[in-house]
Structure formats: C-alpha cells, structure tokens
Image (cartoon, rainbow, N blue to C red; front, side, top):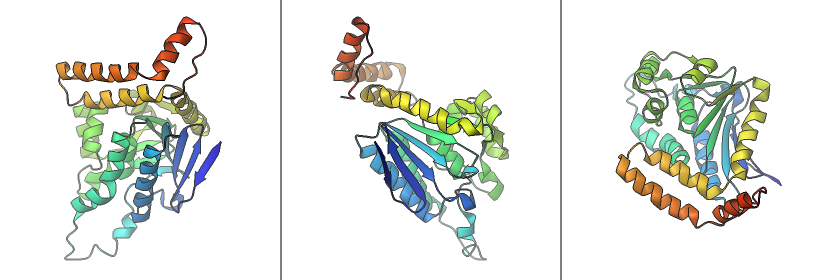
Length: 268
C-alpha cells in the first residue's frame, strides 16, 4: 500500500514501511527557505510518530540534494547596518530538523542525488547512512561566507572522517566528490545516477523488513557510544539487550532459525 501526503515544498510517500521525503525546490537546487524547513520538520516528526514507518529516506528533486540556505531570502536584509541573529535562526529552523533525525528511533538514509552544500551537507551528514549518486558532492561552504559549519556538521563530520579531515574540509570549503566521499567514509555507497533510487530502496526495504525494535535500540546505542565510557556502554548494551530479548521478533527469530525457515517478523 502506498500513501502520499500533500506539502508545498516536499513530497512524502510511504510504501512498505519506507517513508521517502523528497525536497521539491529543484529550480533553486532545493535551497532551504522558511517553508521548506517548516514542512521538513513536520514531515520528520510525523514519520517518527507513525508506527507504519520503519525507515525514512531523504532525497532531493532535480540535480541537487540541497544547496543549503536560500541566499535570495537574505538579499533584502543584507544592507549596511544589518546585524543578523543567526544563532536564533538555527535554533528555530535547522536544529529541530537534525535533532529529529538524530533522536528518531528509526534509521534515516540520505539518497544524495547531487550537490549537498552548507546546511544541505549538514542534513545529509545528520542521517544514519548515505548513498550517493556518482554525481554527488559534499561542500562545507560556510567559510566562504565567513561563517562556521552548523546544523550538527561539527559533531557529525569528525565522527565520520576524523578530526584532521574534518578540519580541512570545514576550513577550506572544497568540494568532496562522490568517490572521495566513499574513500574517506563520508558515504556508505556510490552508485550510477540512474540506479540511486533502486539502490536506496533496496537498502531501505531490507532495513524495514528487520525487527524494528532491534534496529531502534542499535541506533540508540551507537549514538550513545560517543559520550559513554566503556563501562557505561556495557551497562546500556545489557539494558537494551534485555529489552530486545522480550520482543516477539526475538522469539520468532530464534524459533525460525531452529526450524530452518524464514522468520516472520511483526515488529513487536
């Protein structure tokens, strides 16, 4: 069963447990304006709460994933004497989006179809996994306009590629093309452009078919591992394993293995 939700700047389609959210401002390379960030936050919140959604996919329409903040929105503001309040803008518009992705108890996959720059790059990095088209590129452009990486980039990027590489990419603002992104661990896969949707859906549907509670607990543990020391992580693993062990899917998985048949997971 396929369902679609109406928005102005994004499309949302739910099929076989996979919720695909597509940015729909292709004429401006899916740049973020107020409407887009508002609708994206709403869609993510709804996906997080919807029990029928087991995996979320984020992608862009046209030739870009997202070019970041729509600078055309700022043209009228940037006149002599203007003092921007960018911190408050982040707290209201961008931070809620990456927080939703980070805390959502469902895997989120970025299907990066083209350029991901600025906040668009941060959005891709905030996802749990990234599949990139051969024409994708990642650019921390902030330094080029005298700003710092935001929307979680200073947290996610060094965890993916290491401090030294993150420092280089953030301070030079140079593009990272798809093959280099794969080599340095920025993405999980690179595929031909015409195979991006198929490859992403294959991974998403594979994840959606697996025990939902085990997936959500695994995501939580991996995120916690960056803050916990080893002893605390062992405690958290034991708690999560105890929780997973009480699910129907654990029982079904073990019985199916013993009976040498395919398990029938119900995500309960």
